[in-house]
Amino acid sequence: MILETFRRAVEEDGLLAPGERVLAAVSGGSDSVALLRLLLSYAERVPLSIIVVHVNHRLRAQAADDDQAFVEDLAARLGLECVVLAPRDEEEMSTVRRGEEGARLVRHGLLARCARDHGCTRIALGHTLDDQAETVMMRLVRGAGRRGLSGMARSGPGRLIRPMLDIRREEARRYLAEISQEFRDDETNEQPRFLRNRIRSRLIPLLVELNPSIARTLGRNAGIMAEEDAYLDMLAQEWVAGWGVPESTGSTIRVPAGELAGLPPVLARRAARLLLKRAGAEPRGCSQQVIRSVLQLANTGDGDSSLIISGGILARRDRLDIVVSGGQAPAGPGPEAACNVTLELPGSVSLPGTTARLTARLMPRTGLAEIPKDATRVALDAGRLGARVAVRTRLPGDTFHPLGAAGHRKLKEFMIDCKVPRIQRDRVPLLVGPSGIAWVVGYRIGHPYRLTDATLTVALIECAGGWI
Image (cartoon, rainbow, N blue to C red; front, top):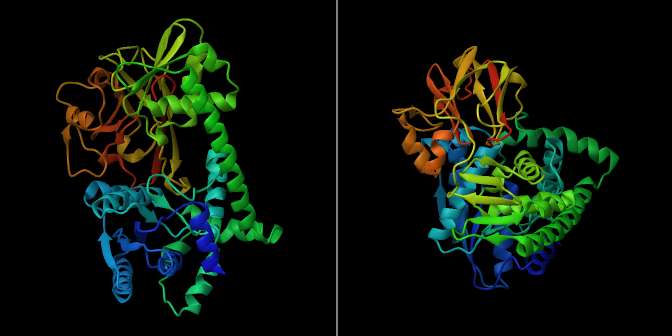
């Protein structure tokens, strides 16, 4: 039964073509080991070239090394090549230590590079229907919209495929028992500090009492959401194609502000997101706050105003049009070069020359469920910051110790590496504490101010308004 479910998913969605090289991500757990064995069974009828890849995050000491050894031995017994990946430097290692989301970002980056290096057209992941249900509930708890509640896609982004999204975790384990295939349990799956684990161990069992088929119900609803989301995206793409006028730089696009403002909100939000992506914005940089700010520009009437977005993207009102550009932004309102204000902790302060406002609030470390991933919100060690910090723009000779880096470097070099356009570098707000720059707003926090095991109080700081 499980083999037929796997085959149907692969063929109905065109996940694998004969002759493709597939990178199978195997952690050693039941889901990923089942994925590998199912791929091998499928390859008996459809020729595939399979390479096993294992990511050792180096977080669990001997247990992580034992997982790696298990996967290497499994690949050898199955006659498959095995590639082991790990964080390559202290910056990646620091990102991994930030939690589940940080580890995922590093892992996907390593897998993408490995796929390119080995000529693999697909990266197969062992996410099951249970993972899909947990993901939907996690996003619901965090406040996701239709796109987030669509769950994980069977294909994408990039080369990723998830052929087991119709298979329950318990089905995968029964299958492994039937073929006498061992696997390893990851003890971190039981640790309640991770939101996914709390949803898995506490929330899902409660929902099962109300609906024993809750996993399949959530999976089915995610599929419906995904179809509707794709349709709405198509309508937004048609609108951008019809009204958008690309400019000579290639990363700049102009649309009539009135037409954008006149769209139904559900399409206006998607059109704004597409405009930002056309200019080169990262998907995670297109938060709801950013989208709302872009749409506010479209609703302000005649005049000129601008909005700077992390990653060097500029959205501006140019009379009757909205212009979104990446890396070629003309000068516009921004923090003055001599800007120097003070932010009390807790407290709030406006940035001169902008509509932006920094707000800080304090909370105990034990009360922080998850470290913010948004470019506009950060969590810093309040004890290292003190009762107040300076907010200013850069000065000659400024240095910065980025999170995870080995030491200080010139702030100018950091901005160049982050592709901050030259014309915007003097307008990027800096949060400066006793140990130097604590946050290059929109880009990176300073290493000395990171949360550690010794942190007692967290400063949650958000930048809202004209600077995103």
